Image (cartoon, rainbow, N blue to C red; front, side, top):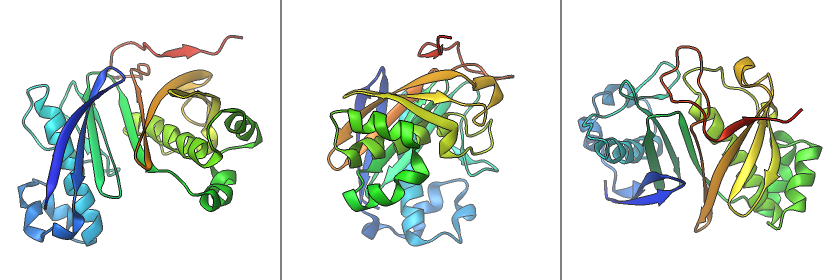
Length: 234
């Protein structure tokens, strides 16, 4: 499969972006993945996306001197080497990955159209969040895409620890030209309740990329103490 890779510094991390041509994908391209048998029933598009994501992940791991391919966990999550955390995302013809020694989550999403934003908004945000998005200087479709993506980034950072929560378990509390903050409710995870997570973002073409890192420790966690997570003032 035809791919191009380039690293991009962002928010204190190095993102590894892989643009790929899914039409050039061939089944034998998967053979270098140790877990290729687990993709046998996947569709062609899904296989191409998975491959591009793992290519990005391999580049990210090489940055810290590790030469391996992340496997697939029982929740379909990437399996990272001990002592490391990572995140993978893909959208259309772009995949990206990031690696860290602290919990980290990344997401890329195509900016919604006005019609899609209007249709999906009730399933992503509540009325209070809508007011915050509408009060920002951003067009509503962009703001809603950011809310969706930021919540995905936070969920990905804890994909191995929590059951997938709903979008109503994290509430948007602020949105600026560079970051979006989320307030976590008990439905997300009891140990994370009443916390605010700051998620960095930027726009790349017709997509947005969000990233959250260094969130907090979980029981039996390997990550370092929180640096961007703070309790909501009472």
